[in-house]
Image (tube, rainbow over all chains, first blue to last red; front, side, top):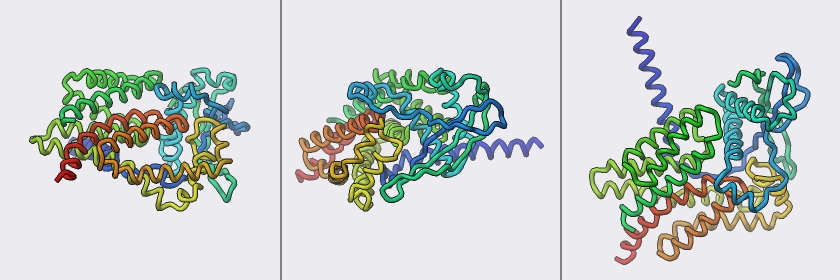
Length: 163
Length: 232
């Protein structure tokens, strides 16, 4: 029994080491193929629900971009751009889900939406809603126009218990 | 620029880039705040030059923890460049001879050149980049433009075509800057302006700071190898 536990621990350690090397390798031997192709782009939309089994009625875009950003704001963001960088991380998580859904990426997106709700950034929406669900919509070009497709629905998450 | 000077300057610039990144995370959740507070402290130690070998090693270890925490880089290429610079600094520190130190730091310079050249090459071989369609796509529907008003740039295809070729040619021809001392300085200023524009238009502020942190390596590399080779 003890030997089996020891072997499982060893396997976990080896797995974690292998995973770390796999994550580090692209930094040590980078591919540098920035913007080589412009892939379909994910958008995160969320809905607030009163109960776990309610069907979402209204989907809202998570952190829609402003209509205009002034030059002064752009200069300021050179030093402080926390929200935008977090939004870019959410896009990365969405892209990872599109490749292969993982609980980690789903949790990260749910956590960031709940974070905004708690920060009252979305307080006009929160009201009495107790649950949250998000979906991923991909935007891609077809001819000269853009086309949207829904590719993923998250689990329904209680807002009070962040993942 | 001597190897020691270039390494010290890299440490300082990297430290500032990490301070900027870490501050942005101090408004995040508790676990993230904890990780980035530690990074902030180590980055300050790196700037002031306190036990830089150990500080770099700890920063690298922290970088690995962050890779595990976020299951990959938080900020894509910027995080990867940060890890690359840190890894090279750590290799320089443990290198047994001066020659191996130069190999480790030279690797960073070579990767910096490749970061521009390969980016240019992958665009050149893509028809959509050559005809300006790819950059129109970036503005039309990608996640990057920081405002809706920037999306309206898609209405200026000729401007975007011109911008596409300017980027492709600049990135592809970047290695030629190594042939001239003044040329390299000018090209690095243009490269910094390019990253500045990306920061303004697409919010990629971290790329601006972290790529500048790698510039001392190429300045040293040029003087150490290229200029000497050319003079022979």
